[in-house]
Length: 480
Length: 135
Image 1 (cartoon, rainbow over the protein chains, first blue to last red):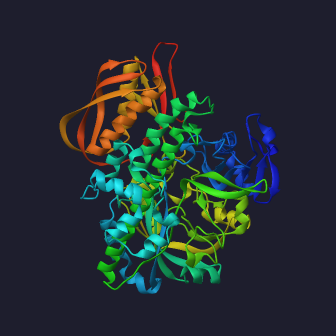
Image 2: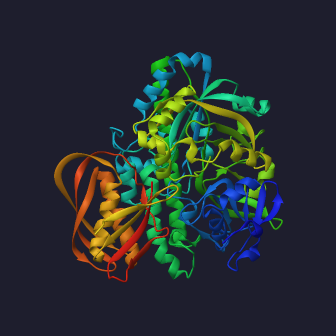
Image 3: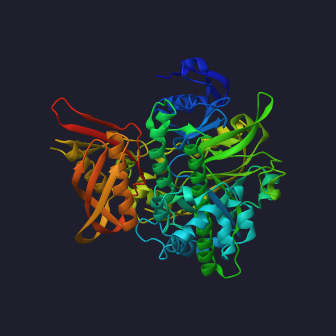
């Protein structure tokens, strides 16, 4: 059992469990948390799970936990591991089932005052336009050849088909296309699950929000990002839907027996991993990339349908410009200086957002001077944040938090508060809420989550990413 | 005998199922999963879907069986409360899932996980299993 005594305090916002804590640890385990959050973390298995991550073959420097970490399958949500591809492994469990779950933010040209009279109509129209996919799905099911194109070309194929604009591709992480994706590595089961779900929101903590920029923390960066006080913006939170889940399910099925063949021992089967350079590792890496491309295409099409709804209510000349789109469940190759040598590592981020610093070549040119936009959703009805990547973030493999993080089970939330009461409370704050399921609303009640303001404060003070703007919801649109 | 119960879990759905035999355990876990998909039934007409599963071992077989039911249910918009096994071994199942057409699912069970999976025969010779579902 891990206690506070096992930790070494590095700074007020960084705590370390040394490698000597357990004989199977290959590197220390580090948690970016305040002292109060650290004490809260002992309530679940997230710290033990970071220690488990530190045992993975090939892991470099530290296994990391972000301040929003909570217990996941095998590895925690809010975990980061950078693994040397030559001697190390790749693990679907350290990416998560919802491959490329992530955030997309659209900017309007309007202030809240201008939009308020039409807010209810906008929320209703957006809800009508974007199905959850659990009941009412997309009317058109794509065929397998269309799915294959999305898997290999991501957002690029949608742009070619006339959806969106050049900026929608350019201002997205990896331009919405990982070029090592290979559709042939994705099973027909996964493709079939994906056929009717491009442009669907899903359920659980996924949402669409019409938000208002409540506070600007950094004028210079906000100006570069095109954000201003009281501006109305739209946030999209979803991922690769059933397709991504099936890819993870399929590859766990492949990797569990393969792992025994490679004589790799892990504490939980969900940790299943194989050498990165093995045939199984390479195949999963290509399938994960294909699912990530599908997720970018999903958010891209949701943005398209939001624009349609927006124009229908406000007029054809209305524009919604993309700020950025970034994943928080993904595995990618990145380069870092390790032992004074530039080293390529396989960065696994599960519930953690990439946050590249100013000057990084992989971020769009228009943001290169200030750094990569980082999009952090709050829980339903609470604030969300736009942050920017920092040079100091290198110590965390340029990773930061991804949201608030659950503190209460869904059942406990339903027992504690009714969906109707959550709606009344949000409405009393002037927030419009559109949802098909009252139970879903209760499960996602703000009380079931950590305080996002505290989470963001930690990453800001720890130097992982810097606060740019605080966004508060005006209307929340949920699936089931 | 109780078919299944829901256990507390912070983010997801944890089901403990029971059975006098291994087959009954699998059927009760399938029933527990289906109950928790909270489906709105479209038609009461019985639907049958053939399944054939081969797995690494007995715990993996349970996950693979439930995953296949989840997959077939999602792509065909169906829910399966029952199954008939023509063949049932430690590592393989052949048979059919029995269910109904669905209008909508109230709960999106996205995946069946191996995390903290527990399957065992108890002292009284009955079987029990705990499975965590990603929702």
